[in-house]
Image 1 (cartoon, one colour):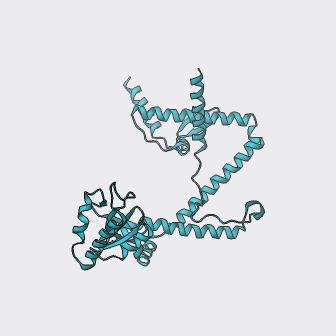
Image 2 (image 1 turned 90 degrees about the horizontal axis):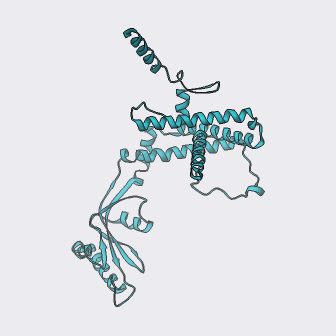
Image 3 (image 1 turned 90 degrees about the vertical axis):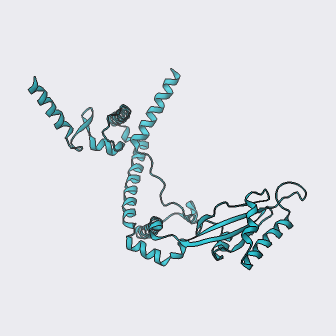
Length: 311
């Protein structure tokens, strides 16, 4: 008895040790699916003892087997020879090959650390940032009632702060009451704005100020906005390296795509497609469609749910 148990345990251990590309996990008719092919088609799984995880894996296995079964039946019925299915198979092959080449080019377009460092050095000012405090002076539209200041009062208060700032004293005290006032709003804490995140006019004013200085950023029918520069500094390379890598990778990718297009001799009928160029910043490729197995499994589940509701 003990010998039989030992032999059984050894066989089980041998089975669990089978390489994923050799271990058969699904059989449908004469077709077999290895663990490696299943996980490549559905997703990677980790062996877990939790019941929920096991149920999810079982459901995916059932779905995969169902898709395989239906595809075999379609071939047996020669549906793969129908014009519509043939067209879909051709388009799917084109998409798969296109995605594969795109991914290869993206990997080749990734810049090196040296390229990233050189770009940062050449464009260091692009990564400046300011720590600013904003003061909004609300203007009321009703001259008599309501929160806010009249246009003349708002103008006078703004001028007083700007004048005190230019003289080098008193501006902060004049702005302080707006922390708790219905007539305006003063940032309790200053905010950090990297270059490019503020509206153009505000950015122009903010980056032109000296530390501690107040400046006027806008005067609209609703408010006057003042900015005070608390500090100006620069994001370091470590902080922005991923942003630079993405920018350089996109640039390198565009060069590669343009070169391929030129060498491929692409031509489009202007009468049919029109001659308007693509909008700047348009995506070169949209997100890949979901794997066919998942789409089929989802459709199968939705159909099953609909039938259950009818019953």
